[in-house]
Amino acid sequence: MKTVLFVCTGNTCRSPMAEALFLHRQGDMGWKARSAGVFAEMGAPASLNSVEAMAEIGVDISNHRSQPLTLVLVKEANLIVTMSASHAAHIRDRFPEVGNKVFLINAFGTSKVPADVSDPFGGSLNTYKRTRDEIDRALSDLILFIRSELK
Image (cartoon, rainbow, N blue to C red; front, side, top):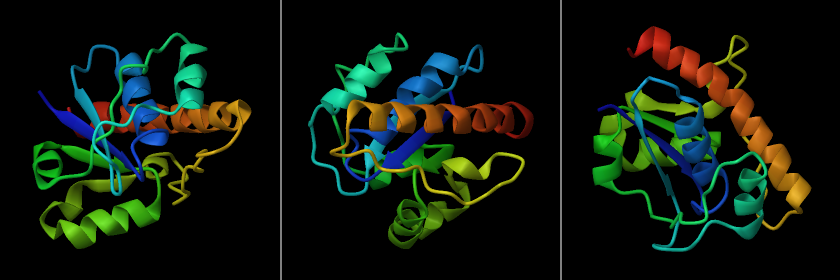
């Protein structure tokens, strides 16, 4: 089974939402999804606003627990998808051997604009919903990429 690893900073907002949305939307692709943070603590729950924003669309991330990015996680992943260019740079610096499978989440669309997904940390529920929707739009292109390029 192939694995996509979503990476953000603390693994309590963006990457858990991306992981859950990917699993929710992938259809019959059969990929596994995981998430981690470049500066994450082990075992922190998803932020309350992340949980609420996802529950609004019928996706439950209440059992999510954060984990730091490790060599094992990056080596197990077939594709590493980051929320920001700085996350991608961090991974390439720390784990140069996996640099060829690290991509910014917004790099899969037709425009391939290297735009970061905004960090909602500490923001209102509406901020988290906007971030959720931004990730969801980017996942459409990611899923098309996987279906066409990484079968």
